[in-house]
Length: 290
Image (cartoon, rainbow, N blue to C red; front, side, top):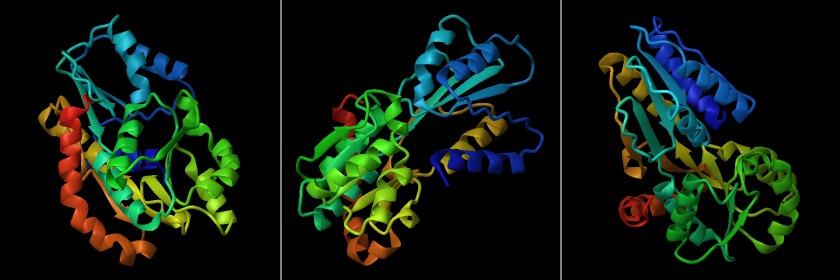
């Protein structure tokens, strides 16, 4: 199951309980296609039927803002935007972000216990704030500097599994722990770790990925299925949703799940450090400007 599958699972659960609600799911193959879908929706005339447009990635935010500057939302329309901290003036635009800082902090704590070399943090790009927040959390938990590499300068870093696979032959020499926030890891980094005996310790991302490699020490989890179900239910039942929310480790929507084969190594450590991770996450957002 992927992160998008997890979103779909939450939507399907909602649909099972609210069969009277019409749901249309789009999987645009490009930002240009997504832009047309969103623009056409905005231009639809006002009606008495409440409608909600869910943008399931922060990648869509610049496109959405561009068209919202040209077209006002009619009173019956609302928007829910994932992974955004921005608070909009319009009351019917809702945003949330699931913070990976606290969960990544706990991953860094575990890395400190099993790594004898400086860890590598591998990021898709250097522009996406949620993954840079994960980087900061891991470094804070690890307690000292880590090496950082980027697969690309833009969104293509999320679809660069083949590049990551090729580079693993070099990384395995220099690193014994890799924290990958890059997308497509199953076809890249995890694949390498399955094919070659000597591979660094790894981390799963977004969902429990412990079954993909015996080198995955644990996974930074986002319970996005539970959150989208909650938002859709609130919208249908009450007609409103929170305007702007941040969900971190304390909320339960983000977590660090130790892989079953490493439970004896890390569980007591993680339980002992969880409260500190929550405190550090709160302090981070108070001081970082995110």
